Length: 195
Length: 231
Image (cartoon, rainbow over all chains, first blue to last red; front, top):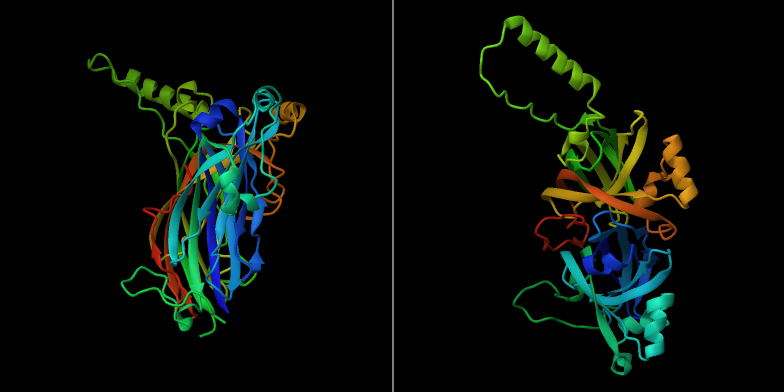
C-alpha cells in the first residue's frame, strides 16, 4: 500500500462581482477519489464558515485541509470538488457555483485556482424564482461535479468567482513500486497494481 | 531513526488592520496527535503595540522660539500624545502596520505527516473604553518546505448571531469570540459560524526538516511563489 498525504488550506475565493450582490460566501468541498483509495485519517469533505468580507472582494475561508490516503492504484487520483454557497441580504443561502480541480500527482506544494459554473435557468419561471425567491437550480449531489458523463445533458453558465487552494502533495512508498510522477524525462511507469 | 523533526524559527512580525491603534496578539501552535513538541514555546503573547505616531506638522516659520516657550510646547505635545493616542481620529482610519516583531520558536518530532502544525493567531485591540476586544483570528499552516517563508494570513472575526446580540455585545464590550480558538485550525464545526474578514497578519518563518526522506516521505518542490495564505 502506498500512502498520499494532502495537506494545505482552502484559502478563499476572489469574487468581487458576486460579492456586489451577495453579502457572504461559504464553501462545501469534498476530496473525491476512486474505489482503490481509503481515507486513513482526516476529513475528506466539510463546509467552511460564511465569510462576510469587509473589502467585498475576497471571501476568506482559511479552512484546513489534511487528509491521509492509502491507495492500491493510481487510477482516479483525488479531485477537489467545490460548491460555493452565497448568502444574500436576507441571510438566505443559495448555490452560487460548482467547481472541480484535479489534485496534482507529483509531490510538491501548489497554489490551485478553480473557476466556477452553475446550472442555468432552463425556463423563465426558474429565472423569476431565482430573481425574487433566491431559489436557484442546484445539483442533487457533489458527485455530479466530478463525473464527466452527465455534463453533456447540462446547460450551464459561468460564475465570476475563483476558488484558491494551497495544497501539498506528499508521497510515501510510491517509489518502491516503480512509480515516477515527478517531472523528469523518464516515461511514467506502471499506472495500476501497486499491491 | 524512528521519527522525523520539524523546526520553526521566525517572528510574528506585524498586522495591518483598520480602525485600531493598539493591538496585541496571542499565537499558538496546533499539531496532530502524532506530533510531540521537543522544544520552544507553543503559546506566545506579544506586546501591546501602538501604531506609529503621525508626523508632527512642519512649522510654518523657522523663526527661533524663546527657550521656555519651546520647552512648554514640547511638554504639551508629549502630554497630548500620551493622553489621546486612542481617540485621535486622524490615525484611527489610516492603515499603517502595527509592529510586534515577536520571536517564534518551536520544534516537533513526529512519525506521521497527518496533523502538520498550524499557527493560530488571535489579535486583540482596545475599544473606546480601553477594554480588550477581539479583532480577529488568523490561521496559517507551517510551510512544508525548508527555507524562509513570508506568510500573510487574513484575519476574520465571528459575527453575532442576531442583531440583538450584536447590540448587546457593542454595549457590554464583549464581542463574539470562539470559546476554543483552536476551532479555526479544525475542519469540523466551522459551517455553523459566520465571520467578517478584515486585515492581515504577517509572519516570517524559517523552516527546517530532518529525516523526512529517511522516513520514506517525498515532499517534492515548492511551486508557489511565496506561501501567502489568502488575499
